[in-house]
Image (cartoon, rainbow, N blue to C red; front, side, top):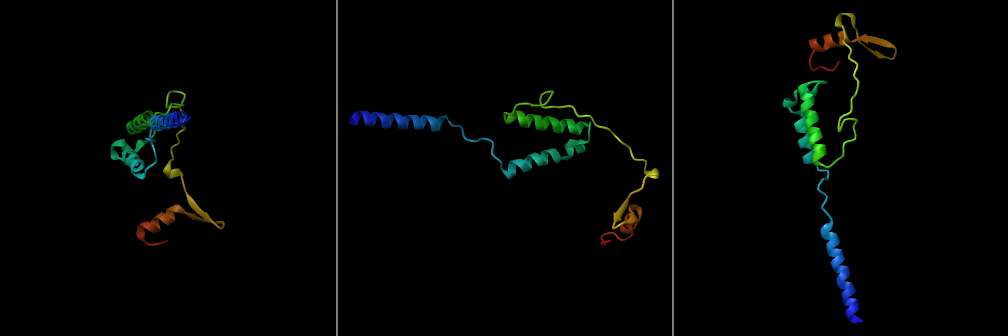
Length: 125
């Protein structure tokens, strides 16, 4: 009886040891340093501002896809990690445009505010 109990305890201990050994440590945990390193890469001048359709945007996309792949995430877009999005572009014709601040029904043209700021830089308006 004692031998059976010892065998059961040995098997339980062995099973627990194998289970703990088989568990992989969490490789991807949040840490501010890693996150900040990603921010620095994406904000770097080499990304050229990442304007829509630019070479800088393509570089940033490649970086993000590489990081997602490296993390073992499965693509969920319509084209791997990518999903097409339609953008509509508008161009403002400055000479035909105005902007104003409206507060309590009073309109103050932004050109006026901008001129005041240019004449008094650093002062609160």
